[in-house]
Image (cartoon, rainbow, N blue to C red; front, side, top):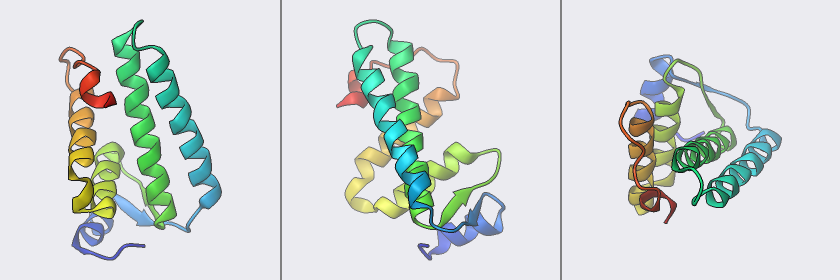
Length: 123
């Protein structure tokens, strides 16, 4: 499990808990995330709202898999935010752009605004 201030604060705040590493569950989540992304790509010309939903779910499931492999599990009502925050911490500075996209997707999902152009997130 990564040890740093963010992880400690999330555990102490009741947003995250230590959890035995679970490679089997992580593999299942990654396989489902791959199917989500393939479904999103297959529907680009049909329904951008569905594309956004599947892309978001793929991102979330991949992030959860990363947490499970790191010995962590989100446990509260803000699990999506916790997954994005911890995934960004685990991935580090070299992946800031990707993590920023994840955070933007999470925020947009919670707003009642129109779906963004999918090319922004699929590239």
